[in-house]
Image (cartoon, rainbow, N blue to C red):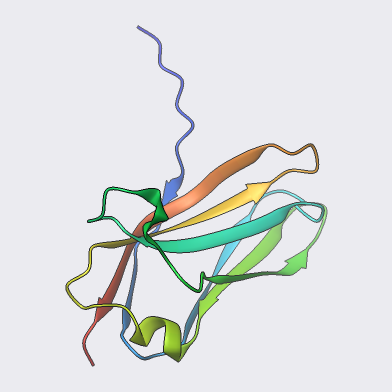
Length: 114
């Protein structure tokens, strides 16, 4: 039986609570007109309303006809508010100029004690 999969790439993030952190992702496409959102949520809760506020900051740091580099970041106050025992996950979505939303990257988001 054939299967069609459209699932995000898995990238797990581990950091120290209270630290500022950023990471870059390079996509093999020109995504200049796309918009990006990212968030952290507590996977232990059963509702999607469990998103941790504020969300990750996402910026497009460079774009050429062949690649786009996207940077996600969190500041000290954001990581400091995470509980060490929390089962957190994160996601990155893009919205194409035509309005199609796709979750392209997700994974565990682990905040260790200092």
